[in-house]
Amino acid sequence: MNPGVNSLVRLALEEDIGTGDVTSAACIAESQMAAGRFLAREPLVIAGLDLLAEIYDLRGGVDELVILKHDGDSCVDGDILATIRGRARTLLECERVALNFLQRLSGVATAARRYADAVSGTNCRVLDTRKTTPGLRALEKRAARTGGITNHRAGLYDAILIKNNHISAAGGVRPALERAAQSGLPIEIEVRTRAELHEALAAGATHLLLDNLTPAEAADWIAEIAGRAKVELSGGITLENVRAYAEAGADFVSSGAITHSARAMDISFRLELI
Image (cartoon, rainbow, N blue to C red; front, top):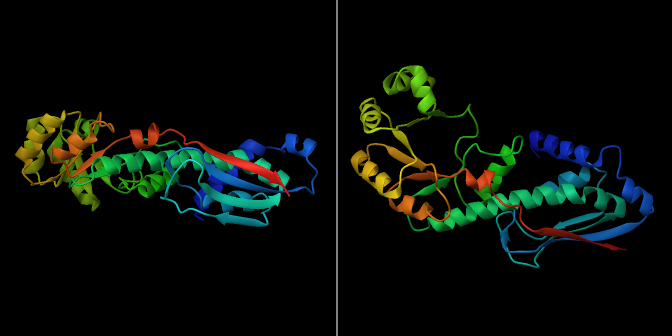
């Protein structure tokens, strides 16, 4: 397990359990054993199952954990995702944290799968964005990838994306591109006007971001670019219109909704005494 993920899981457990699960301690004998099942309660794409082992290990471990699905599997209502056996107190004190991770990450994976399916058969790939839950970016981007889309840059450190404010601060499209070229990193630049488009292409831009265009406008711009650069479309792209943008000829479309607006999926935990 990635050390950063371990820290996230530890923090989540500490946040929820604090000094101890007082309800379980008051109601349940320390020696009581139990078995549990994680169940899908609606159609979903599952993600985050590997976190279960980490969660329980950090609380002293369990006797048995059986993962019955793989991340990326499509599940239906009633599917058993995993089974577990151990101390009843351990299962109960970990229940909410386990469900929070599974429900959130499966929501992202399910949204990602819907976007990927919507552009199936085109030459366009769907990208995620940096619009993620603070602290959960690595997990949410992994879930998005599990759902079938492509990860965009992980953060501000691994690729250059020159946006409108960078262009303004640098004094224009050309100086921004010339300075960025010295980094040796992949470079993408946003262009807002036809003049900026022409300047960017003349300066050797190979990856352009077009923002807040209609599908028809995007098709017109892409026709003018004529393959001289890769094109990403963003801004206002939803599940309902993403195919229209893909069919406009874009190489990529990006949507923050895949992470920032993903709905937590309905997953439950059922416990039985043994």
